[in-house]
Image 1 (cartoon, one colour):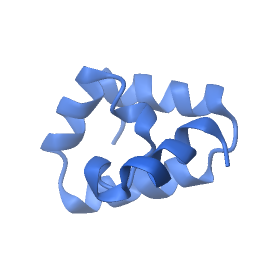
Image 2 (cartoon, one colour):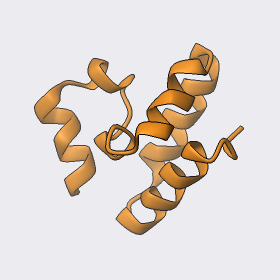
Image 3 (tube, rainbow, N blue to C red):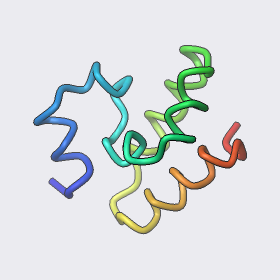
Length: 70
């Protein structure tokens, strides 16, 4: 398991809507995610689970934090 997904296993998926902990490390991303609908979070969960490269996950976190993920 990579570092971000490993943290999910340690801290519990429900704590971060089933998303990698990388999203919790960015306050603006957390704010954006808290405003998302369940359906939007599911799309984000699916997208993030397909990423195997931490740098790609970092890019996704940045997009969410900037409000550019739809």
